[in-house]
Image: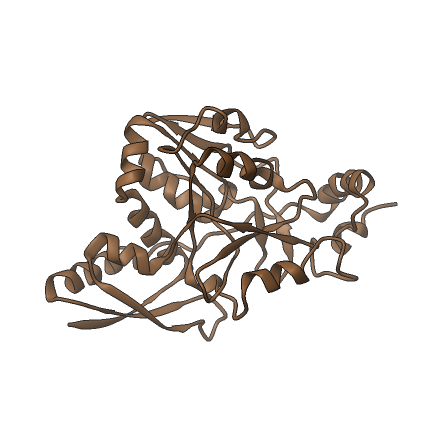
Length: 284
């Protein structure tokens, strides 16, 4: 049996979050270990699935691309704390701190969940870096890899680029561009287990999902897939996808350019990096 489905970005993120919540090593860490869920809109869906709490997803984001085509950041004053779950109990890290103290306590049975921004044709992911010091994940990635902590990378397929990830990384960089539409960025590879809509369908139902189209007339990152398998598994997939059909669109909360200018001026002076041209207008 086979069916054809189309998922909005929010549906994709909900589906991925549901799949991640069913992974055995995630369930074990949720019960007996530590799970750190780095800030991202996909991460917000995962927080909901693992804790049962409702999350304002736009406020759980960090670096964002706005609907008018700017690389930007979430307003720091509205950003939600990062969620750490320790043996089922929820802890929250203020936005001006990072997971480092918790990662110090983690081991190979614990999990860090960090979504990326780009996925290459070979299933390798990377995250955008607008912060010259590497941001939250850049500051702890060595510790994660050195200790052998599980790094789970949820990725919607609409983030796929048509070139190898190392090519994208080599060509990007905060100090490499002469002009930028928003914050100039670099890319950091995420060497963890990538988990997409394909994986979610397999984990949740046992069916096989095959992407056949991406995009829509209105510019949204709609993913269209064929789902095939035995009748039971395909019907289950069809049921799950129809249950999330009305998942609301995530609304980003970008920082005002005037507020950003004051922060970026300090970074520019400290790290010798360029300033977002939109923010630069507010500097005297």
